[in-house]
Length: 258
Ligand SMILES: Nc1ncnc2c1ncn2[C@@H]1O[C@H](COP(=O)(O)OP(=O)(O)O)[C@@H](O)[C@H]1O
Ligand SMILES: [Mg+2]
Image (tube, helix red, strand yellow):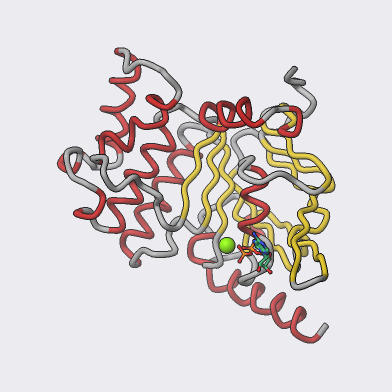
């Protein structure tokens, strides 16, 4: 049985740990993370390569199981769900985007966007059809719908991936370096879309990035180091992206001299 409403947050992690083996020794890629994300909050997670950002996001997405600790999404404890229930929960409540877009190559843009509904056995009723039209207009994909992923630019592919993440109306959006493969202009466009999804639609967002110019769009910036949170501040604590970059450099230096 699903245990509901164990947490009032959009996302909450309690003592979250994920261990992996490196050679013979086990180490914690995520090492006791307590994170609470309010409904409608936009959190950027920063940290050097290998600091555990992707592992933490995948745990929150239910794509990997925690070694210990708990993840709650909209009050549901992920560990209370079996594999099948977890897959369905993820498809219905979470929108996930990755750096590499992860589009299905032999499906058109439109088929990719609709894929989560099909996989869920849901019909493309009038409401979903309207949703598709609105998304396609908003993400400026009208002329790309019949195209296959390999004929689209990186920015267009990421917008298709975003439309696919949004078609099921998720309350929480999880993004792992979504602008990592994009040029400056496409990257900015994606940031503007996240900003709008957050401000106008009130969706909670957890966005992993190592780029200060992307993190600065959020309302709160969390920095990970060696699987632990070492800084957690409102966006307003930083004047601009360059101040964030400087502070972030400092944290990296502290790590190097430890
Ligand atoms: N499946 C895995 N097996 C073993 N080690 C892993 C695995 N996934 C990640 N790691 C290790 O965990 C640490 C954190 O990785 P990751 O979460 O990908 O960091 P980031 O996204 O911040 O670059 C790294 O040392 C990485 O090598
Ligand atoms: Mg990563």
